[in-house]
Length: 83
Image (cartoon, rainbow, N blue to C red):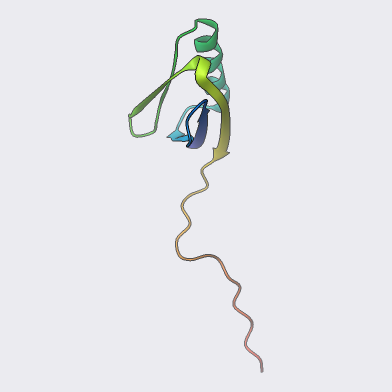
């Protein structure tokens, strides 16, 4: 299962978005350890790219399940044909 993790960073205008195969609890554990060690929080995405943020500057993490990409301009209901 792929999970999208949005990382809010203090003093940054935009959040970082990382799609990862890691479980949310594992990500939280890694952040907690990095904060305790006063080190860098490192997260690797599902394509092997790595994001590193000073743990003390992480403002929040937001987890969402990846349910696939939506294609098109939106989902609309087509009215039933009148008889």
